[in-house]
Image 1 (cartoon, rainbow, N blue to C red):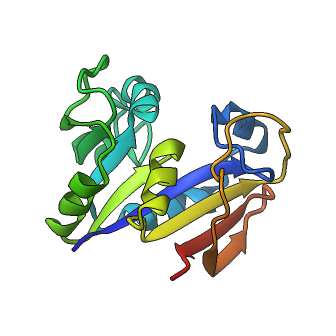
Image 2: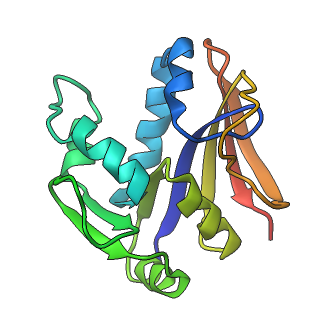
Length: 179
């Protein structure tokens, strides 16, 4: 059975929506190393439709010279949860269809290694609620936005596995759903 691991960039007040606000903090190379380690044994990427529509045009033409993550994002199988019609074309992409906890459980049970999620906050929220997410990596930026869609809408208890702080002030929390 595969483990589903997700990473989110969020503000102190839990906002994940439209993370353009992260730019003022820069991207610490240690963050890239942490994300690289997270993708290490992943053989599939699971994305929500909104994240897919942002990622496809941003990644599909990138090369390893542009970004060391390009081979992973472009060559790995991508499954998009949401509408079946995909606006952007991106290699190795398959529409998954609407969110369906049972189908996602079957997907998880049919694989080894891990399934990686970047962003896709609504998808991650559903996976947590349905007991399907194994590990959540939150990159918490030292800013409260006051408005925007929040990752957690309801009481959610998580166990802290580890944490580290980067030079740009971002805190990386590794969490697992509390059982």
